[in-house]
Length: 286
Image (cartoon, rainbow, N blue to C red; front, side, top):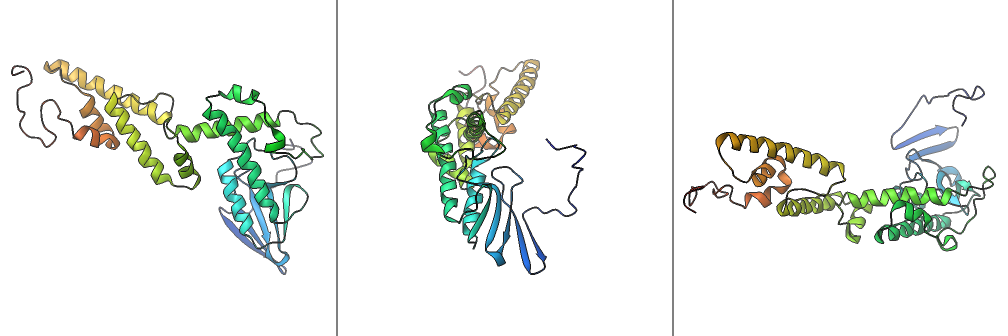
């Protein structure tokens, strides 16, 4: 709102940092920590000599939690780091100062919000149906707005649900429609390798079953387009040569190494995977 306001001219930083930055000013140390969560640029400032940390908006102490643009998994990770700091006082972005004991409660609020939306997705609700779904706010996030700048904010719950719904669907979409509790746990713990292996296995199965992956995700659409273009090119070549052999297996073998095990084990146009001589000719001996 104040961007471009004549009373608030731009004051760009002269020093930036990516993860951590430590400053010494007089007799105090200011340890700056990049802790994305509530928003991507969230930064905490730890002053060890005073036993205090300024958390920014990663902590809403006994006031309603704004999740309208948050990554909930990053936020939970940020709270775990804050909880490990040797401090006696937390100065939150919203609400009154508190101690480290409140960090666990803040995490529980996030987990309850996330769990509520995950259950909506599990039930197959669309985003519009999800925002109309009644919420038990006394159980999820019992605190009032408590912000002097916002007497009322009736759309906050809707914004929270829309953001979480989109992120839950995106995470599950990356597992190509077969997300399970173990997949979600792998994502939360950063186990990217297990997700890649699971996606590769699913890609093999789908390619083996028919060649076309689930429509709707960018990777799948791009792969479908490449397969379609290659099939068409091979088909034209076969037509010119008078050949009418299946092309799915060799095309998939060339274009996508992730489905190579599926295709390499199949004979290609009467020739074994090891390249042996065909047992019989393509047309006359059948």
